[in-house]
Length: 536
Image (cartoon, rainbow, N blue to C red; front, side):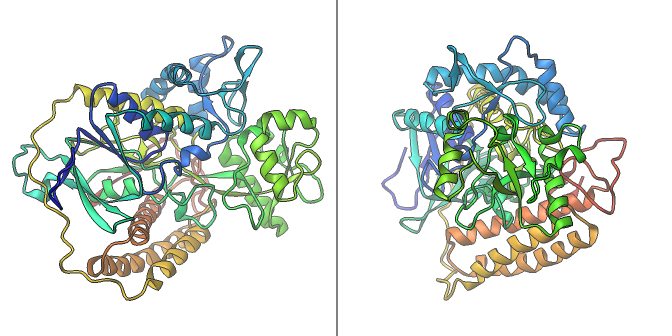
């Protein structure tokens, strides 16, 4: 597995980059196939986005519900851009994914001995399986405990992906087809770059919410897998569709704290500061409209009234009900002096989910042989122009199984020798202000110019600034030793460019992409596919 020779590659059967629900699920499933798996994660294993998910996992569980209804709700939310085959595949496999988590011991909420199902915006039925209001944390905790006791899995915490290694870089030596054969990763603790070799690599790196100034995502969401796959020659798809969650807690000490969709699902009402309810004036579904509709309505009301925030009120529900269904949210709000059982919660929209990503098939395979992408880093076709609430965690598990089964079916080609990372021609950076300044500038202009409502002029301004930043960052990358901050900034700028180029290519308003220059929706729903070296 590991070599005593400094600089020699560490060999595994499968490399998994990312330790969220997608990566951990795939690791456990591959370990059952006796695969030697390395999980490479840039922070502690518990710090991915999955653990932040509050609402739950969408699956048809009630006999009164149906796969057809879940598929239809997903297609409606996706504004005609969902891939039907991918949607049917995920919806039909969702109950099996829930059942698998039950066998692992995930403590889902129950009522009268049955799974308690809640409802969220865009769903026509109660089908959200949850663990109170901290589903992601409960699932993540259970999977981590399993991973840490599985001998076939080796965990590399605080290791940041630098780049993928593919045979084009090696002159295709010993490998007949173009494929991914490993990666370079920075060990943040030793400041050493390690070489990992494997016939199969799986990207489960999550989304890119940190490209925006305000986000519900953790600091790890810097689009690392999307950027690395793009640099390796993979197509990306639908990057313009960034979901802004309507209700992020508005408080100076509440960094990225999400107020779950389920609060509105259980009767929460959105109010202006004077107590006026405004959602019925924007959509017949009111607070239960899909997230893009609610986020735009809040953005409209805030701009119209010059407001810092709006308010989400569920104080009409009994205290016991709130404490039972939303214990985490109730406790956090109370810490900040907000008693949600007595007063409304101040909220604002914030970047939440990357609907696009690395284009894959129904096995999670990318354009590069040996390279898979699953979870938020991937674009499977499920989400279309807008993700339906609670479809993300189930997508992680369904495609983790699909990818692991496909890997198990594949033969492992012989790997060529992989060169060690060469940093002989770089020096230590004399100052880091360039990184911190560019990071701040990027996130601010992305928020201002590429946010909930867009115009061509704003997008062109963003594109101009991105080009300048890319030049500065590439120069820094070429001349100085890599650091985690530099690698994350490099990836964020790349992803920002993909978002802006995709948005400029879409001459309509659809789902999460709303353009004042193109307010109508075209008759044909077509994905935006970017190809390295040109646009599809």
